[in-house]
Length: 435
Ligand SMILES: [Zn+2]
Image (cartoon, rainbow, N blue to C red; front, side, top):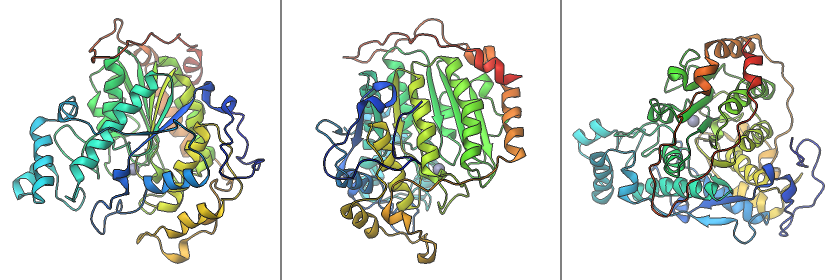
């Protein structure tokens, strides 16, 4: 598995501006690339919204403070064109969001029909450009993944967006575009793994009738959007793991080991696309999960090597301190850097400047300002987690799960090189855990 130092074992390298890259520790030896844009530095979502906090910009600043961008590591995201947006979204909906952004107003009928201009999905200056840039970034990330890089696009992960409706703080659905771009290049097997605390409903539904895509989601049970129950197998193409509140590191590891890794492997994906929302972390104000960032890094680092092409997206996350530490460390892990024991002064200052109305001062943890990696936690695996695992595996038909389009469905995009099929990996593990 991973040879990364600095997680649980203590960092052996001091932090500093030097790029202490150790490529031999990057997943499968692939180089990673970070896709970002300065549009995320602009204030968004108005006021009194959980996303009106610093997010991607804090990650970029922290990575800079750590000296974690070597030349070529950071790529500026393009903005998706309206023609690209129409790969998935309804033309009238695209026009409605564009017109509302330009006019700064939305009428009642548009609000009701498209869900924009609500408390949940507010209209704010630049929303169309921002959402389009997120889509453009995920398309670019898919292209970089096709080039053999592990593409990290933390501004992506708007997994609730619907074809003709904004939903759950998401105007467009950028993970759908990453997957579509991979399919357009000729891939026939794409696995989507969603580790956000909420069910990846928009992505599952977008590919519900596409035999080339499998969607897997671990999310907190009983939470909005209240979909993704254990019995929802998406007609054989989806796997849903609704975990009880308080899901801890050992429980996540159990589900990764026994369900996610065997199922993804048995599908022999040519590409994996991950949504890594930070709301799955302990101390997120909107959820009740109890995961450390180290457990999530470990999980992601084990999923990425399952396919020759990998796109890693962000997602939710409403505690700016835990979120910035999670995604900064994720970039560090994906790009083969060593996680430091303590942050340099410049990094601490970035975290000290963050603000969030949803976190009370007395709930602040000192380590949020001084470290990247959360301290290990010890908690038992609860019986209901094992029962969930058994139920979900019992619902999966291994033959249907593995089956995929026999002939490539090539919807070529100009300038794209078709990508060859990945070697089929051993599938015995699935039968093993299905029993
Ligand atoms: Zn979420």
